[in-house]
Structures are given as C-alpha cells and as structure tokens.
Image (cartoon, rainbow, N blue to C red; front, side):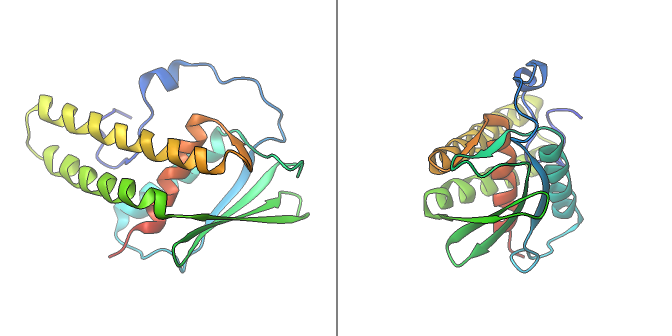
Length: 180
C-alpha cells in the first residue's frame, strides 16, 4: 500500500517497515481488540475500513504489557465515557480484568488538528500537485506521531507499549472520536 493511499489515516513510515521488530515475550501483546459500538457513529465505508485495518494491523504486530504484573496476552476493549478513554484490559484466556481510564483532554487538540489535516490531505489527493500532497502528508504524519507520543506518555506508568503500537492505538482513539 503506498504512503499516499487515501483510505488510510495511518500508513507506516518506510523506516518502521524496514526495521526488524525487537524480540518480546509472546504474552506481552494484544490478541483481541474491540471498540464500543455505542461510542462509534457509523460514518461511512471509508471509516469502517479504517477501523478494520487499524485493528488488523495492531493485532498483527504489537507490544503491549501492563506494568502491574497482570500477565498477558490481552484482549482490549476501547470506549469513550464522557471525556474519558476507557481501556478495559482482560487476560485473553478469560481471566481477570483491569480498567484504565485516561482523560482525553490532552489529546483533543491533536485529534481535532489531525482530522483537519486529514481532510486537507483527502482533498489534495483529488488533484493537487504531488509536492503539495507530500507536504500535507508530512504534516499529517507529524500530528499522528505527536498524538501517539502523548498517548504513550499518558499510559507509561501503567502500560509498556512500543511506538508502532501507540500509533495504531492513536488511530483507534481517533476512530472513536469520529462524529457524523
């Protein structure tokens, strides 16, 4: 899939694709992800596709471990409650459950800016010069990286996750914020 594919909010950067994943415990990962359907407004097929691709990519390659010794692998349920991202983490074998509540406020501006730049990007690919598309795409990726960094930092005391996992989780947080 090309870096300018209009059906993807989050495309991997070439250096992420080329880098070999660091070895990690098989239990330090997500094996199931679902989003609270009541948190999502079914926007259009493109958004449905984006959600499905983000979940697929995340399940294919992720590094995710709770710091409190709660052993994985894990199933993750994401939802929004008011201004809070709720991450319900369950042991994949149906064991114990932990709930992590994260205020969304630190991410709000980034999400809003990210949606605006995505709109500009989708408009640009319909006929703008390649240099303009590339500039907008770089800004889009920068905002996506900023969002994933803020998310990772907010979770760092509770969850160990790598940069690629944080990027994919940020994509899902954005999907939860889509409104028709």
